[in-house]
Image (cartoon, rainbow, N blue to C red; front, side, top):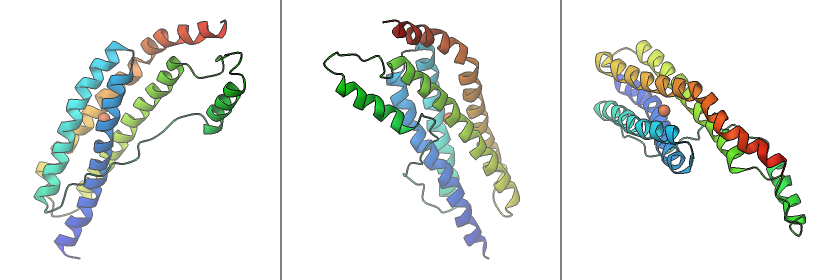
Length: 187
Ligand SMILES: [Fe+2]
C-alpha cells in the first residue's frame, strides 16, 4: 500500500464531506428564501457563508493531496411523515374540491416545522461526519495533520454552533408556528 493509494482513499473521505457541504449550500439557500422566521433567515445567511468556507477548507486539502474536489451533492437526512399520508390528503382533497375543504392539507406552518426539524438534523449529521473525519485523519499516517486537523475542527465548531442555535431556537419557532396551526383546526 503506497502513500499515494492511502492519500487517494483519504481524498474519497474528504470528497464525501465536500458533497455534503455542496448539498448544504443548496438547502440553506432555499431555506433562506422559504422560512417566514426572520431570526432563522439571518442565521442561515451566516451559516451559508460558513458553509462556503467549509467547502473551501476541504477543497484546499483535497487539492494539496493531489485529488479532484467533487461537485457532486450528497443526499441530506430527511425527517418527514410517510409519503402516503401526504398523498392521501391530496387525493381526498381533490375528491372534496367541490366543497373546497382544505382542512386536511398540511399548512405552510406545518411544512416549516418539518423543515426546521430537518435543518437541525442536517447539522447533527454534519457534526457526525466531521467527528468521524477527524478520527480517520488521526489514524492515517503520512498526512499533513498539522494543517488538516485545525481546518476540520474549525468546520466542526461551526456545525456545532449552528446545531445548538437550531435547538435553542426551536421554542421560539414553535411559538410562532403552533398558534397558526391550531387556529386552522377550528376554521
Ligand atoms: Fe452546516
